[in-house]
Length: 312
Length: 146
Picture 1 (tube, each protein chain N blue to C red):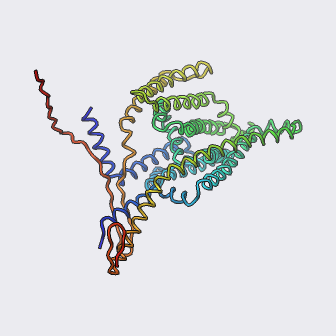
Picture 2: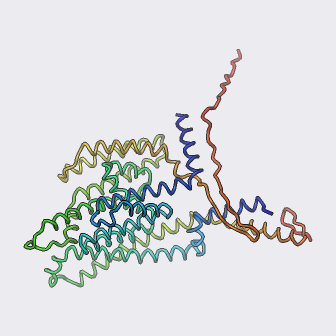
Picture 3: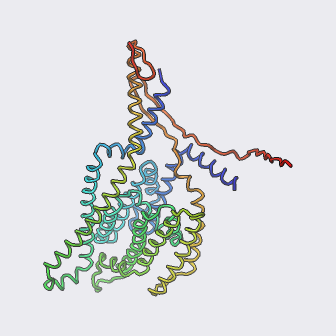
């Protein structure tokens, strides 16, 4: 365990020192994953689904604040929806604006959480999400998670609409894209169940994780995992929704394992960064590189045990 | 001559200005009450936009129903109901905004105090430099003797 902790501290120190390299790389990869996820789910406009364009956008996002990724993603979704129909594009715009005005203004970074949900669905890790997010972010993630789930099912509803439009002949009654997509969303019991279960699991996981009793964090992961499984099973039986029990079980267990892993690496993200600064006074220009002082424990420590002698 | 102490101070100030200071320095241009009130007002505007958009989505979704029953509605009751829902919606947002922005302001207070302290110290150092350049003698406790 000591070796593992030393390894973690070393990694932390390394990342802290080369933060100016790792942060843009991390942001770029995150942006690329999100943009590719959007183009996979909404890939109706070929121009906006080209790999080079998405890579270039991700490259730009690597050097800009995190909120820009959300902004560009929103634009991509609306533009892709235009190809389906104008009313669907307007609906996409309206839904995104409701999320922005209603929540994202308070916590701008929450947009990224919403965009990560469809990626977790694609990776078959959706049921692991509430366990991980509940511990990492807390109740502030409930609304963006809910919006992310809506976004995922919205993509499915738009894909269904495209199929219906393609199959429709001239004699058929005109399909209102706007109403079709909304009807699919409102009538989607699985989506509503997912949002409710995610919210409950996040809240419970957070409350237990914040408790002061010993090993509260471990208990929170386990309770969140079990609660996730139980609530989804009860919900699917009560509402007669077809859900893969195997996927719920497996993904919840994976969620608990990922949460434990995150708990171990938690301190890795809130480190003091290396700062590259430029300022000036009347006489000089200063180019300063401030590297944080970190105490890294040595791996090869020599521990000398001194046993106290007992006197008779 | 480059003075190490000044560079340290300037670096600390620059780090703050680059990170947290971007939001916290403009925040402390206001009194707490003004800052909270202004942001609560902005929130009310955004919440109103969200409400109008949500209402528009619901209306368009139920457009067929609405058109078929357009003459049957009791408009007085309907408007009163919408206004009541809007009032509750806005009140909840206003309340949340007040709590969040008051907390934000309080949380940033300690940072801004340290920042101001560093600025003051830097200014004092600069004043000492000027005195020295003019041939004066600066004693450590700030007493200046020409």
